[in-house]
Structure formats: C-alpha cells, structure tokens
Image (tube, rainbow, N blue to C red; front, side, top):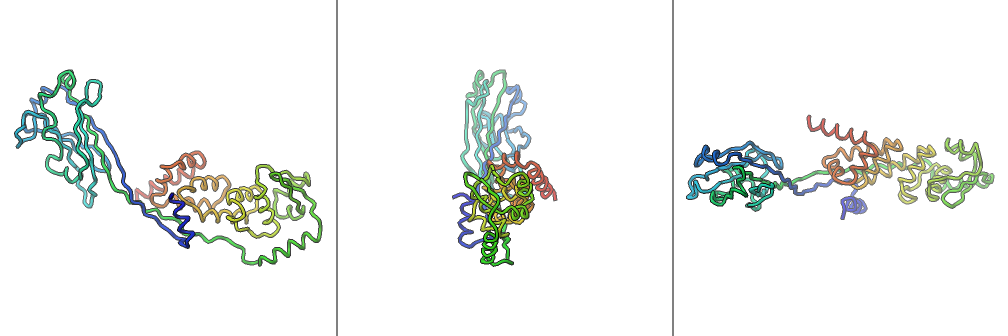
Length: 364
C-alpha cells in the first residue's frame, strides 16, 4: 500500500491529523584505489612491521582510513611474507551510530580489472576501531604476486570497495486537516426556491454547448456573475465552450445560479473545477476548490498540485503545498520520485525557494 493510500484510509476512519515516521536503511558505497609505484623499492623502504597510513576517506557519513603493511603486520608468523590490509574507522563522534559495513579489496590487473579479491562480509563498524583496524593479516603472499599480472612495471594497484549501511529515521510532518470553506448564510432549500423563481419569471435566452451537451441559461445572470462570460456574450447568444467536460460546466452553472460551492469531491474532480473557476473568474468557487485540494496533499500528489497552484495563481493551495514540502523528509522524498521532474519544469521558482529555505534552516 502506498503512503497516500494508507493516509487516505486512516483519514477515512476519522484520523484527520496525522504524522508519519519512516525507518529505513540507506546503503552507500565508496571506492578508493591504492596505487604503489615502484612497489619493490617502497616495500624495502617501509620495512617490516611498518604501515603506510593513507589519507582518510568519507563514506556513509563516517571517516575511514586504509592501513597497508607491505611486509605484513607484526606479532604473526607471516610477518615479512605477506601484504596485510586493514580498514580503520577514523571518526569517533559522541553518540555516533554503529553502522554495518562490507569491505572488498581487489588487486587490479593491467587492464584495471579485479584479478584477486577478498571480501569481509557484513560486520559492525565498531570492529574497525582497533589500533590497526579490521582486515586481513594475510591478504596475499609475496610469492603469489605475479609480475606480469599484478606488478607490471613494478606498479601495484589495489581497489577498495567500502559499503556502509546506516539506519535512517525520517519524520514526515503532514498537514492537519484544513477547515473547508462552506457558506453558512443560505439554507440549501432557499437556493432551490430562488432558482425556481428565476426560471419561472423568464425563459432562458442563452445556449451553451459543452462536450457534446447543450445547456440553457439567462444572459443577465451569466453577465452578472462572470466578467468572462459577459465579454463572451457581447458577441453571441450561442456559446461553444472548448476544453471542458460537460459535467464540470454543469457544476459551474449550478454555482453561478446558487452562489453555493458544491461538495467539490462529489461533484467532479477538484482540479478540473478549479481550472474552470479560474477561467471564468469565479473566485469563491476557486477558493472552495483550493481548500478541497488542500485536504488531499500527499507525497504522491504534491508536485502536480503545486504546479496547478502556480499555473492558476492559487495562494491558499500553494501555501499548503509549500508547507508540506518544507516538513522534514518530504522534499527529499519528492526529489527521489517522478515528481522532481514535474517541479523542475512546472514551477522552478517554487523549487528554488524550497531549496534555499532548506539550506538556510541547515545553516542556522
């Protein structure tokens, strides 16, 4: 079940104000190549029981150091006959988690391909905090180093692949259920009486064709309610409305006569009705659609909803989307989904605003 479906089910059961904490693992792999030019001379200079301590590398939010003993690690009977390799955890911050790691070390051949590999299966990073770290006392013996395969031109290259698995707990703060605007001044039965009185007083004098259906209406009512319809009717009494569903226009016409926003979710899709309300400059209906859409802002819908709000100048809906995306974890989740491309192309300024605000919060 998707997150949006889960939240819809919970809200349908009466739980209107929700927050979600998601616990998951994150796997990060970093690679590092140790290249020793003039290996024969270097191993002599380093000597026995001596290590080459390399610069630290950062993988998975932690610092690591590779320790290489060309002539083996001391206190073993193999000292001087093998190469010893260890990975050491170099960062020691307080309250730092103990992630799981996997280490793979490979000697590269002349084509840059692994020709000899050893692997440490999953272990805790705390095992790598000893003085030399965790790894292999006997990574490879000197006699097994092939001059043509491993030491061409007296160069030894070892590839390290370090995978760090950390736990992530992301709190996604969801918007509380917004208060939906609803007119409180006119009883519903009065609407019906007024509309009936209008129709009984005079016959409709305007014909409107929408999506294969024909509607009739009163010119004076349409002109009084919508400046766009007033302009359209200055040219003709027979209107043809393109790019709109008949059901959407029917809901629009009901609002024009009653001044009462319908139950938007039941009448038609709020998105289409919002576009129609904006097209005919019916601000009260547009606001009702905005607030209806605010009820359903989720990770799956927020990108498309924000683009809709930007395109049709909907400050209430835009504010709801921006607050949702500003909550911890939500922007990251949308960026990792198909919604990121929609935000980049549909509302780049809003995306930039979100990123800038996030950076500013992190710097505080």
